[in-house]
Length: 328
Image (cartoon, rainbow, N blue to C red; front, side):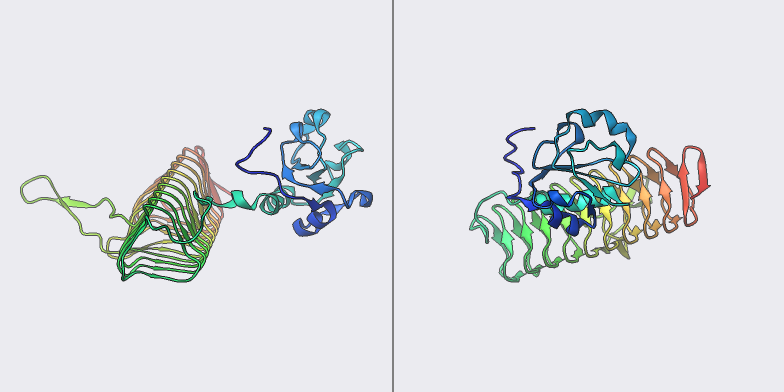
């Protein structure tokens, strides 16, 4: 992957400085001044790159590795060729992720589409909207009456922010997203095409057949440090709120129904569907394409395997998959 102008290499960080920032120990002190500029896979890493190993399965890839350093734990360190410095840590995956944030900050959230910052003259902003300083609004974005947007937030091209919506500081709302009837915290990332706050699916039998739509007058509450993937939909509450807890990360193409309450620091993978009024605890992980029934409770720290169907409550700390629940 040469000449990647989308995510150019960093100007360079001293290896010892990077080690300090990611909580790793540099074993070869003579390599302290070597510069790290990017991240790479083991088999194609070259001078200036940092990579990581989590298991012995990557051993064969070391034959072509020319990395400036490899992040790994003590058990794997003896496998690393003598010419490659080792950054030792018990949490190699976490350390490598931190390294990526320093070396490629631009890749951590959707980037602006134009070289110019500020408010585009091609955006449509209602006179009753209130924007703090350093807000960016790209062309064709629409911001409704009474909307409030905090300092350092960027609204992408063609995004739609509905009347009365509140968005906190240092958020990124990417191109084509729409946000209605929602209160959004600080440092929230919403990727392209996400749909937040539309009415949920609810109907009652009609007196003469057919169905009558049930009014949906709740809100969506998105707490701080949440990330919501592309084309994900989060319905507003019926007569209550739909809530996404602090630090939760939601992948692309997830459907979250009305009145769902998701706890703090959960991870929800692509194509998961969560039906209305389900309550999900803190630290829950849900694998791809899992289906979660409505009006049930999922306890803290539950892990749900991909492609699972969850029909009833799951107590805290359990793992649930094709073979049913088991204690974590």
